[in-house]
Length: 118
Ligand SMILES: [Zn+2]
Image 1 (tube, protein in one colour):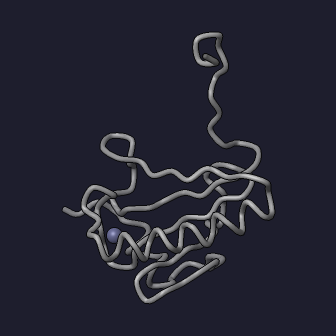
Image 2 (spheres, rainbow, N blue to C red; image 1 turned 90 degrees about the horizontal axis):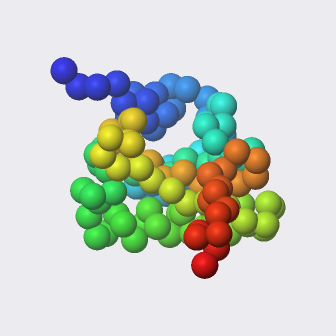
Image 3 (cartoon, rainbow, N blue to C red; image 1 turned 120 degrees about the vertical axis):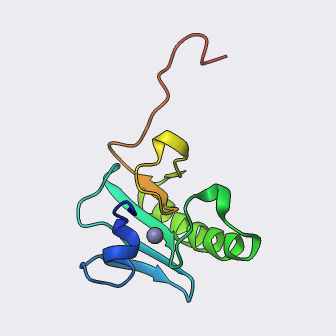
């Protein structure tokens, strides 16, 4: 049985209200109803089901990355910086490729140690 896929089941068919940030024929960028991490959180997904970054083809890569770049520029303008992140393997909880663009309180931070600072 197929695992629940929030993106294909609810977000992309627009059965749930999300704040759409950008949309192309193939790609949707939106703010989820509750930010998953970061004070500002945008998620970018291909509209067709792609399981992860590892299965993303070259043409859709260009379109998806272009949307990520556009959104990230806006987020940087607003917040000064952001993180762009996608998870793979056991760290990927929803098996539909999704790229997080996150800014502000709650983003992942390096733990500063003397070794890490070298
Ligand atoms: Zn999907």
